[in-house]
Length: 240
Image (cartoon, rainbow, N blue to C red; front, side):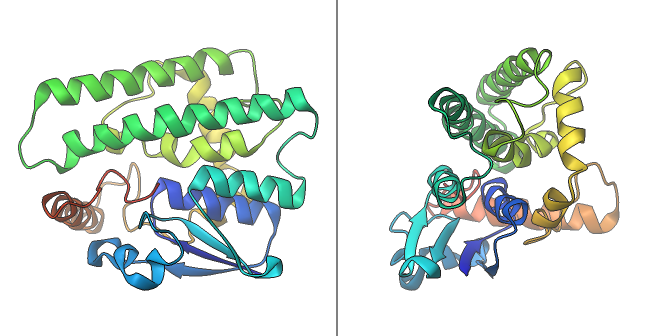
């Protein structure tokens, strides 16, 4: 059994999707990021960085793993699934995993900060981060023109990217001119395990949905993220 400490963010959903795909039994502990539960002593004892997600593997003497990329690698080694066993295949997955960890996640996170959360609009910063997100999306679109998935078969490379790309509208970046990336996005969205993972926990904000309830959810999320910024927290994702 695994305990997952998470929240409804792209980094959190990476791990819930992975656990659903692997069919590993787990208990979900949802942290309220707006209340800074990720900074409380009990959680800091698991992850001194105070960010979600983190897991405890109770089948391995309560071994704790934090950082979403590290958790995916740990699950790959634990199960032997969603990661090739040969050196070249494994390297391809890890390369794209690092692409997400070092590029897509941080750049989208900063785009979110300046486009959504900052109380004042600093247009050069918005342009810089949205432009870099578009460039990274273009890299993926070009690769996916000749590949069904990012690294051979469906793998942790795809799982790492998908929740972030699915939230592209929140960063203010469209996929209109990226047909291969849109095809990949929709293809993975159709997977039952992905749908289950996105509900653990479910986000109150629904991409592409225009409703009064969704607008209220967006406003509450922005207010909480802005508060974290103003009080010294990391609001880009409040995850790793």
